[in-house]
Length: 530
Image (cartoon, rainbow, N blue to C red):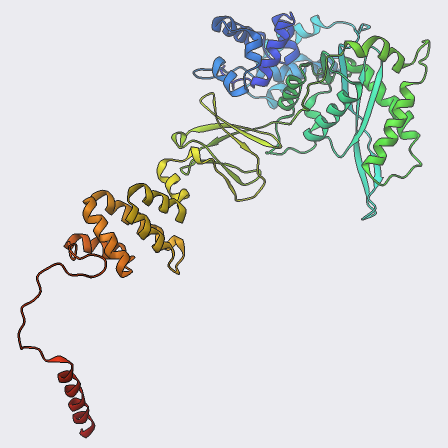
């Protein structure tokens, strides 16, 4: 049965594990995907004849286009659902009167599209027969870092309100040396979780080969549509720090017994010691936590001749991978359509970002961080913007606009004056005079567009003479200049007003000024008598 394509962050984890020599089954078990999916992806790598190192350097959308050039592949979910409940069914079978048939009925009511009775019994029997007893695990230095949250919070007093603020406590330890780290953060959200993990790696001064967190979805208290999936965010974090994530199995605390034990120890060495102290900020609280953890790491271990810090510094720290130059930035993923105005809308900030106009109507994959926005279409990066938090605002790259829109945005008095200078010197003088009028420039742009269009369609000599007449008589209207050119009037008259045409013949049919003066006086007398 088909399913959604796997996130490319998870596929990068698959490639890293394969490069480290892990088998397909081991990779499938670690990443929680089917071995056929692992096999199909590795086959695609072989068919593409690309090096794994080169694939790991590609951005996620570009890498996805390498694996999914056509329709995406899908996988069944019913076995994953059944597998997640195997331990529950095994325990229930030990209770009086509970049978596989009864468990199958409960299974079908919770998952109607699940396996038939025979298949259910077969898979459950396989799980029971494959169960193994627990064993003592041998850990290598610098290999793993176990991660968890303590169940109980620590608190400090907000001095402005007097309110008691609860903080979640992040706990981590290196199993080889049992070196511990703890930190109070505001919540178990994705940002706070990864921030605490980043601080942990900076504290120990390196990166282990594997990160082993608790079931990652347990770190989410409240879902948020604008927050990336915790598993994907963790995989991005691991890719940035050149390490691998191997989550503990669901409902299997034995996978991380050391960190579970560290939580119990921290209740004694941190919670109990700080129970009578009052803190007024998260900073002062974390200073006290760090001090308590430091004493714990420097305390001699039972039946050992050394403390945790001594063992860590002697055997483990130098085997950790180096930290990257840049700290990790949380990535957010969206699939957005390019609007008719060639922008995409990032709803979290209610801000618009431009995309080249050739991609209008296409579906874009958007990856954004705290500071940057990256836009991909058809497996290629087409736009990069600095993230803006101005609601309702637009971030526009002029190169993304069509020529018409660019012309509209570039309009200014200087723009039109420079355009006129490139066409005609008289037109440039006329344009300068147009913008000296006591009117807003926006009202004059259409006039300038008309004059430039008129210049293209008119004889050069006629247009120059029309501009001279307009300058001499203070004519700054497109219609008036157009009429001058249309009628070809006064083109033989120079700008000083000297007439070069033949004068009218002399005659006596001239009334003169006295006639009109007497006429006006007589007319006034008549009106007065009335």
